[in-house]
Amino acid sequence: MDRVDSSRCHVVAIPYPGRGHINPMMNLCKIIAFRRPLDFVITFIVTEEWLGFIGSEPKSDNIHFATIPNVIPSELNRAADFKEFMNATQTKMEHPVEELLHRMEVPISVLIYDSYLSWVLNVGKRMNIPVASLFPMSATVFSMTYHYDLLVKNGHVGDNFSEKVEEVVDYLPGVAPIRVADLVTCFNGKGKEVMPIALQTVSMATKAQFLLFVSIYELEAQAINAFKSKLCTPIYAIGPAIPYYNFSEVQNDQNTPDYIKWLDHQPEASVLYISQGSFLSVSDAQLEEIIAGVHESGVRYMWITRGEPSRYKEENGEKGYVIPWCDQLRVLCHGSIGAFWSHCGWSSTKEGAFSGVPMLTFPIFWDQVPNSKMIVDDWKMGKRVRINDDILVSREEIVKLIRTSMDRESEEGKEMWKRAQDVKKICGQAIAEGGSAQTDIDSFISEILKIHSGIQKI
Ligand SMILES: O=c1ccn([C@@H]2O[C@H](COP(=O)(O)OP(=O)(O)O[C@H]3O[C@H](CO)[C@@H](O)[C@H](O)[C@H]3O)[C@@H](O)[C@H]2O)c(=O)[nH]1
Image (cartoon, rainbow, N blue to C red; front, side, top):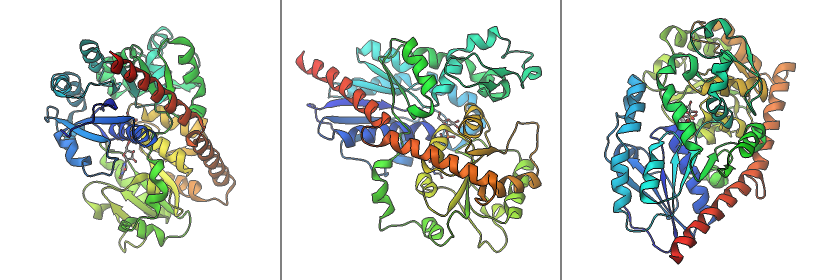
């Protein structure tokens, strides 16, 4: 572990080990470090395996990594047994993390933990350190999980739910009316085996000293306000938690990756960017239809995919670029991108909103389903591709959806583009100086600095 300066406020960040969790936690740390470089030193705890993935990514000098051993299944086959992976995060990490915290020489002012690692609250209590819970999904998902008992009372979860999928749930505080089919999948669908963890996560998060939503306040004001008036815990909407501070620098960097050079040569708004997320995939038959649909649509595409790139490329390859990884936000903000095909992880959802491109939604699991509903029905900046597990979406349907979302001349395409631009503007205002995200981050920073000065006086 790197050495840290003891006069500064020492924040220790404990992210859940997954891309969609590590990114927003790291971005919040970077924002804190950027806004108050002299006041903070931040220790970011990851497994040794994750250090290998992210250790060389740029970060400021006052952020340091510390590691625990690889006590959980490898990230590389996490999807093979999701329940086992999640259970391991609940039972195997606490001890090595606590040991590591005890070994830190500089007093810890506050722990910021991913809400899905509820055990950090107990560690904080034992060590007498205040904790901030960072919920990595939407405030809307927090609300539907917090109010699970209302869903039970109304018969919208449980045995007969399949007869009620089209019923509308309109009684969840701060949540826009939503069909039963669009609730998080851990209530009724295939993720049910991890539902107890989801319920515990949310209930424990309300017991933290601070609750952080990685949300743009203006896009989820009702859900956030409902919790602000209900809970005593101070709540902050810290915005999209994306690396926007370095954005203009990145645009001008000298080491432009090849995929950006490829995009530079494509006409404006001509490329469909496709990313199905970091670990859960679709059936083989569905993948065949998607590949055929993308090619038959005739649009250019950049496709993020693991393994077998030849399967995704059309024969002459000129219209398509297939890679295993890219800087997604940078790609989405490139002028050549015309639409974003996404699995609707919460970070991808916010990155789509921030960059203002119409979206094609293909949610697979958990919060991705309500996120897809938010993009399509509430923000009106996208179209649903995937409906549910039982319906195979045909290539013909996919061709139609892609063409509509990329066609800025048609009425529908124009309207979606306009809505995407409106949402982009809202995100831009939230993260601007004096905007809602900036204001909440600064308030949170002030609170933790107060805690730190209290520790210093003792
Ligand atoms: O080539 C790529 C692909 C992805 N990303 C980034 O990786 C992150 C992915 O995060 P997210 O979109 O949230 O997807 P997952 O990693 O699948 O996120 C998991 O965790 C999220 C937060 O709990 C949930 O919302 C998702 O449903 C769950 O699958 C985003 O920041 C992307 O920009 C890249 O930079 N390059």
